[in-house]
Amino acid sequence: MTRESDESRWWKGAVIYQIYPRSYQDTNGDGVGDLPGIAQRLDYIASLGVDGIWISPFFTSPMRDFGYDVADYCDVDPLFGDLQAFDVLLAKAHRLGLKVIIDQVYAHTSDDHVWFQDSRQNRESEYSDWYVWKDPKPDGTPPTNWQSVFGGPGWTWDARRQQYYMHNFLSSQPQLNLHNPAVQQALLKVARFWLDRHVDGFRLDAINFSMFDPEFRDNPARKPNGVVTRPFDLQLHVHNQSHPDIPRFLERLRAVMDEYGAIFSVAEVAGPRPLEEMRAFTEGDARLSSAYNFDFLYAKDLTLARVRKAQEAWMGAPGEGWPSWAFSNHDAPRCVSRWAKGADRHRFARLTNTLLLCLRGNPILYQGEELGLSQAEIPFERLQDPEAIANWPLTLGRDGARTPMPWQSKANALGFSTAEPWLPFGADHAADAVDAQEEDDSSVLNFTRLMIRLRHEMPALKTGLLRFRDTADPLLSFERLHEGQTLRCVFNLGMEDISLPSEETDGVQKVLASSGYDSAPGGILPGHAFFIAEIS
Image 1 (cartoon, rainbow, N blue to C red):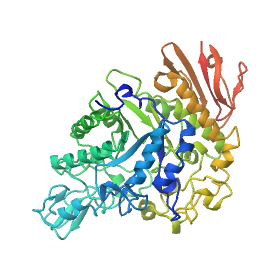
Image 2: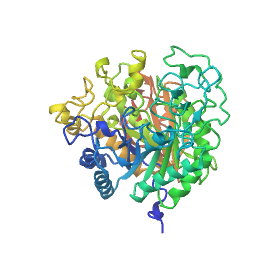
Image 3: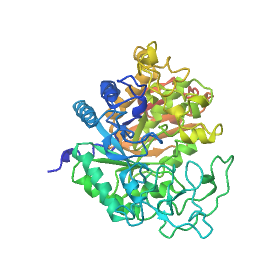
Image 4: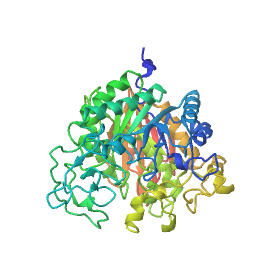
């Protein structure tokens, strides 16, 4: 009997809260967050009303890419605790009604992994073909022109094998050869290890980087758009990633997950054809539950056109998959800093959090978004992110979104740790700490709680269809519909006041939630104001 077979679709429309474990709560005084820290804060997370948590990597790792370089898929890095600490966290989360989703990194490992250590010894080793090795060109240069995301060639010479090995990211993150059935089988065994511990789902990191062109053809050139910080942006990535066999592996993974019942799976999809790949990864019932891309994560502004383009690709056609949405995460600068453009940040955060919770799909709320946290400015000498260090000062990097959670406005290290945190706080983070917002009924934190509760109470918001209304930028208006229930969601995405067309209030029966909105007929909708209303 599969577990949770009676709620196999619990994840559809679920609100997921992303935790970056290094930065959530430190319990052992080393300045770095850990698994016991997450367990300590689970009551707070449950109070938000979210359905589950996604924990970024906590596996054994040399931390050159802060956990996304895995040295042992089936153990916890001592920095974060141990397997017992994870089991304690998992059990407490389940008691509180929270699902637990963990990262799986199937495109590459750390070069410290025993598989790679064996593979690089010689061409006849047990794991010889578990990574992507290739002879140099006759002139000694790399086998292809492929570039790595973090800068420089996507190949590194290894004198032991007298060959190059491929890496889409850091040179210390060698590419797994997922075309090899033995590698696939090993990764499915990893999935079973965590499923046997009763995790509720997987977020698949960079899964469209997991297979490559076996013919090793060069990527075509791409005309640059603006300032180039890395050679990676000068190519169309059609051969180093996104191979059409990836969905076949996902079907094997889905078959394993189905043995365990109600398992959620969501793919991260970045690249030249995200919509096409999201559809391929999620279509039907034999692949993944969901996928998200970078439509919003790297966007410089929030516009009507951007929202419509992203959402109109997922309007409920037969056989269509189910999307997930994120406005901020550990890889992207926080959305309030990218989009607010000097406006009232707290007011704007109410808008972005509400819009995220009103879209059709699964909202992924990144830690600190419920507080309206800004992107921290990290001085060069405190940078940790290898990409930010390499491209300074032309990129914001990822550190500014990875700063520790501020729990107590007047405590040492804002309640995160008893030691100096691994990254500094933002200048305004103390004022936005959890304890300060708990006492304010109108805070971003309490408003976000209200909106999450409303989403759960209204099936139209959680799983209903979405229908856009005919408006002009900056007025965004759409309706969510489910079994006779219609909700209208109206947002002023601009900073200036606008006259609200009378048709936007036609049929309004009851305003369920609002910010900055005067419900008088023919009224003004101020900048960054919005309302959610029942329609008769």
